[in-house]
Image (cartoon, rainbow, N blue to C red):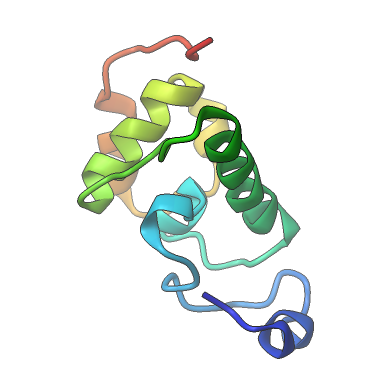
Length: 106
């Protein structure tokens, strides 16, 4: 995780390493090699933590990047192709497009 000094020193949209947070709370954009950091990354993590507090269990305990992304899709549903605009890695984009069409969970 990041400390307060690290958070305040990171400028909006600054390039950072993908190893910013523990995988279970990591935003899917980071796992799909998006390197532009913005507040949406932290909002995702906080949303997952809030959901865990409400459910009293881990929401996305993936054991690998692939498993983590599959769990995210099972929870929030399959992204539309235009929602993958930021994925430059063709293998990652193909992987996401080949996941079974899944509606968001209740």
